[in-house]
Image (tube, rainbow, N blue to C red; front, side):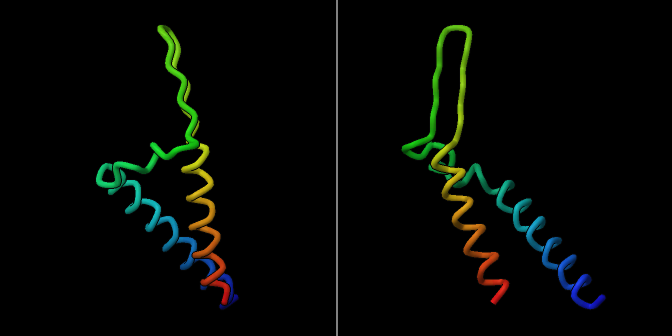
Length: 70
């Protein structure tokens, strides 16, 4: 069971880090507006899909989790 407690602590720290990141997103103006993010605006319709931002966040989180496993 010691491994389970360690995993819970790591998951809690990751969730806390995500919460801190969301609170500071206004101070990172380029996040969500990267080249590769899909944005379509029409008269009665708007569609936004942050493709490049999602890939960037996935790479960063993968790197962090890889470092934690080492």
